[in-house]
Image (tube, rainbow, N blue to C red; front, side, top):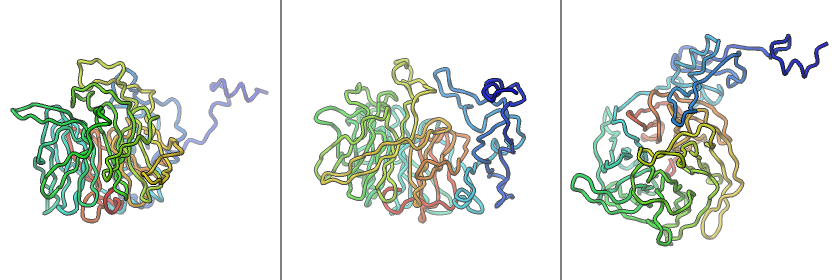
Length: 419
């Protein structure tokens, strides 16, 4: 008799990985005619060995490093490679996709990072940023009419390096990572901080640009709670993308800013590189993403961006409980809820039903509030951020490098400001 311990150590014996291998993917039984949708069985938890996936181990992100590019001896995996929508939970996933989900590329844009999309209901338009060195104007996408149109958007005064934004009570709040710049005979004098835009008049007001005399590193993303308090992340990306020349003097952390008093407080200081941020619909939970896979320490200072890829570094999405106080919400009970299967979650938004949506590599992760992967949207361009839009907030717009896309499905964004 061969001991069980021996069988587990030597898979070449008769006890080798005894498990039932079923097809990893299939046409979803409820919508078998949808050729752009595939259902993954049991999260592909057991794959026939050997299997392999491209890696990102040489200090740079490998665009082939995706779940769908796994090499595995299962013909059904072709469905995974070719699908636009991967469903991991059929009951919830097919419900939000509806009977005819689509993803279309609406605009081909320059090969730059597009960030900070904000939908403004009063003008039925999305204002977004082209986050590129020396690129000053933002863009505006007008959704009126039969076909969306895109054009430059220049606020008054111009603002450089907008990296995140939210709409609240008729105002667009921007997390601005850019510092002073002179380009094309235009000089913009600004420090990184939190700015407010009147989308009707295009007038901009600076709300916050220092922490007791120290410049912020480069606010990356923000969210506004029902009290009007602004929570924002402040990593090093501003200088690492050459949006500002100032070297960081503050720790990478997350702040709460109260515009009514001007007070700023740190609410989270343990995440390596805080990035995307969002509230649950009831504001009892806050979510913050970590993009520590971008390694600032070992990067060549003369190459932009000034970071390398650390394949084994932290990149989880964290949840916190919120506690109300006379000066605003504090965060407690930090816990990781999701480790992105591809790249890292950059922009983060919450749907009306509480689902989380993270811009992660070549696509979007759709998660439950507990971090369960429900659906993966697969794209052919890197997605940096996203935004619910449309009069019913039932369109999901994807913003990235080289393209802007639109998903039509049954999932809706939050009502009001935090969509």
